[in-house]
Amino acid sequence: MASRDATAIVQMKAGWQQQADLVIWNPCGYRPEQYVVSETVGPTDDFRMRLVVYPRGRYHYKDDCDLLSAFLEIVPPVCLEGCRWRCEDIHFELTALKEDDADVKPWKTGTFTFSDSCRFAGLCDICDMDEVAEEGIWLNRLRELRVRGQATCAPPSPKGRLEQVELILRDLETFIPNPEDPRSHAPAPVLSRQAGPPNAFRIQLRVHPIVPERSGCLCVFIYLMPGPMQDIGSEWIVQDAKCEVTVYQEGADWVVKEAATFCFTDEESGNGWSELWPRPLQDLASWVGLGRLVVQASVEFPLPTDALKDLYQGLDFSQEVTQVTVRLAEGPPLFFDKRVLMACSEYFRDMLEEPRFREGCNNEIDLSCDPQADHRAVSAIFRYMTSGTFFANGDFTFALSIRKLADQYRLTGLVEKAETELGSLLSENNVLMFLSHVFGTGCRLEQLCVQMIMNNGCEVLVLQEEQLTQMVDAHPELAKKLMRALLAARSQLRWPEDCLDSDSLEEEMKSASASR
Image (cartoon, rainbow, N blue to C red; front, side):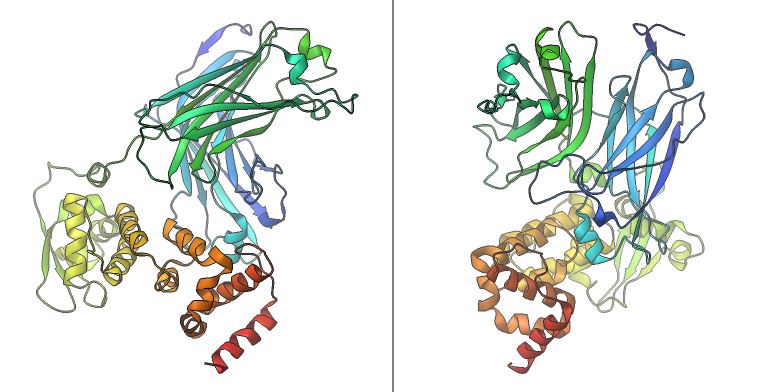
């Protein structure tokens, strides 16, 4: 057996991959920090994995939102027990499984480094289980959530900008409140410097006092803030920021590391770990008797995405140019490069690759049954595929149509561009109409609509009473939620709390229809 100080340089076998499934009954019934663990999968002579899911989140640091988190634990081979080891570029995917859909896409992905001192890393802020349960999309008839975690040894990936900060806590006696002294007040958190350029996001590490009652628990948070020369406006978001923290004490033989991906926004600029146990705490002397406590943090920012780069990632220029004919309900057909169409859209790629389908045999796509797929809309989609651009020129009906088609054709970038343009056109006059098109998607546009509706005690619902009444028949589920929101606002609750049972809610809607 190798000694603890020996460093094992581990090269994973090419194609190493493991996956673990979990079935979680009634995921909404969990409390924050409660978790479910899968079986350990893989042979004992190789690296194995476990899936750990926190339905309500691992870190309860937000008062109003406990989002599902999923962590991957890498278990080393038996021969490496007690040794130091490190595995880089482990790609982790979490997928929600549906009984009636075998072709599901990952909920969230991330690439991490694991080691003997950091066996866990994972994906935070995945979804709100209350919304998932209400939509009923991912829960089966037994109210179970079935998830799959897959780990793959991936080739080295491009690295984004990396920022690092460090805090050294020298006087631990003042940092640890005395539980025996009722006059002892918890000291203020310790803040690091801000690291980062003036024209980009900067990071700051904040460490909160050690809590003796909780066995030496540390609260460590990373905050993002725009640089003084960064022009991003009042609303911003940084998704999939790869965060790591390391805690150790000089003169001690322990080190703790944690890693996770977080989503930072202008409203939630801080994320982190509310319960780190660096070492068992028998008494205060066990902390102050050794050296200084060192807390380090790093954030790897996601690389900027380029629409054309993402679209053309799978384009093979060695293939001969083949033309695809697209037939529409009205007007002449359109013609497009088959290679580009397949590289840009999984929807069309699946259609054209399958020899059993007519489209794959004769390179002809019939969209004549879809009234929204007219000459203008399909031309705009093809223009996006070749230039990465989209402009609706203020026509929100056209932008909504493009968003729907882009979602159907799995063009994520075009969906985002359409939503960006729609967001710039959002007003009190059209907010209900916009929301009816994106309700239940969880997209940014839906969030903007909800935020506008909830402002000023849902005043917009009163102003747009006629539109709300029309929604009772056209969009009954949305109408129910809007009426709940209105009543919740009157009761000083927040969206989307239910404050009315379904029977009285139906009576309220019938009354609204009758008074129209």
